[in-house]
Amino acid sequence: MKARTFIAALLLMVAGVQSALAQRVVIHLSDNHKVRYSLARVDSISFEELEVGDYDFVDMGLPSGTLWADHNVGADNPEENGAHYAWGETEPKDEYSWATYKYCNGTYDTLTKYCIHSGYGPVDNITELEAEDDAASANWGNGWQTPSYPQLNELLCGAYTLIEYTTQKGISGLKVTSKANGNTLFFPAAGYYDGTELQQAGVLGWYMSRTLFKYSSTYSEDMYFSPSSTSLGTAQTTYVGRYWGKSVRPVRYQDDPYDDWKVTKIIVEKGVSSSGDKDVILAPGETEELVASVYPEYAKNRAVTWESSDEAVATVTSDGLVTAVGIGVCSIIVRATDGSGVTGEFTITVIDPHPYVDLGLPSGTLWATMNIGAESPEQYGTYFAWGETSPKTNYALSTYTNPGVEELPANKDAATVNWGELWQMPCREQIQELVDEEGLYVTKQWTTQNGVNGWKITSKSNGNSIFLPAAGLFRDEAITGKGERGGYWGRTLDMDSYAWCIYFNTGYCGYNSMSGATGMTVRPVRVQEEPYTWPVLRLELPATLEINEGESAYLSPLIIPNYAHYDDIVLESSDESVATVSGYEVTAVGSGTCTITCRLTNDSSIFAECQVTVQP
Image 1: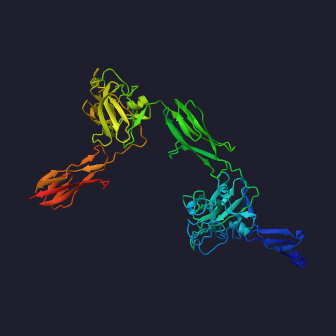
Image 2: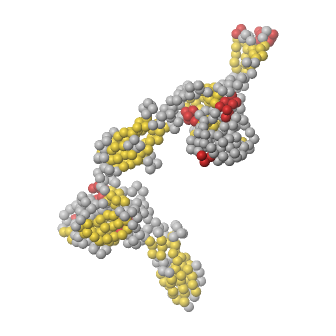
């Protein structure tokens, strides 16, 4: 250590000056603080040159014991920005780009070092900066290094620190305060280099780790913060090109790296859901895939075990596949195996079974394979009046109570009341989609199945089918038409006391509306969380129309399917000197030809055309 020591004369001179005053030495620091010493305690005063590796650090009381430097590489105090470095480079430069980056041949996919994916260059599987490429080690000495990704995450973990975007001595940045001992670190918003200009200085902070991003060799794991409304008071990790110029906040080198990053939280969710649901309802035999998200990402041992609180209700495999076994409720428990004792749970409810089939219909409607009250697809089951949920012996107007609603609520829906909340009677559109009068999705056949007459409806898309037995109609005190016709209630009112239903006989299978007092069977559908809106597939008009001057004709477009939902349809004339349009009425004006186009107001790509010829 080099030192210049001023003793004797200097000390006597200071003592002489001070003897008339307070007999003490006062040192004035740059942060306006003062340090005072009794002159009797001062032996000598010396000035020392700072040696490499001799930098101040802060103990944040973190589980890993990591000691963080109190300022950036290239800075002299916590508020200074310091220098900016590309990842793997140890000196600042004038331009930060792939063209100037040390470890590539001018492009992102020609990396020459630190590569774990063959698409970016020769693979060497080096995932952390070596000391010779570490800006902290190269500039501050072997006692320092750039923090690893786990060390950054630990510093920003809400379990250990409080984070605040603030100003310190007039400088914007991120203040991190230890929950364990109250010590703080300040990271100035030093910006970054992309190209030749420093960008977002005083607004953003971008601090690198020594860890390569595991999903792409062109990125490193970094700490980023900003004052924006979406991230005020927080810090997060993000990924930008290795060539960017970023700040470096060193940590003290640890001879025995911390190797006990523990699990702090486990979240269990449905594998195909992002809704945050914490439970699921299944029927026996059904399965559901669950996924466990283990935090933090840098925990050393992220392995978990899966178990069911009641395997008579549901079982679970080691990778989270749940199978419903019997009726009841149980919890699926996920346990960390690192000794942290952390668990996550998910509730499974298994309800009464009612088989259903997917016919591959656009709406995704799942149809039950049998009627309410039946034990097989061929049994007729129970008869209900519309809006009533129990059978009776006399289905006459005098015994019927009209529910007075346009669509049946759950407490008046025979499917929901008898089979549970997963089931309901089909709406009008679901009925029309099933009987499919345009022949878009299914084929229909009058047939005999296990000695019972009825209609077999088969999907054109997947070959699945359902059978609707001809159960007849129950009127007054008698069932008529067994084996010859059938009626199946929907949940939608048509008008007055008439409601929509599937209706068929030996030669026809379609839909109709019937008096709600009639006793008919019910084929339920599974409840859909988000009701389907049936779109218009196409519009059709006659190809040509001939009319005389001064006459009018109506062009009514055919809507396919006829139960589709749409806002409105407009008709337009290509030449109003030949023919004009008002609503669906075409009026001939003058001789010639023009094109009448009809289209959806909310989807102009759906249209049809008719060529109109006007005779004089």
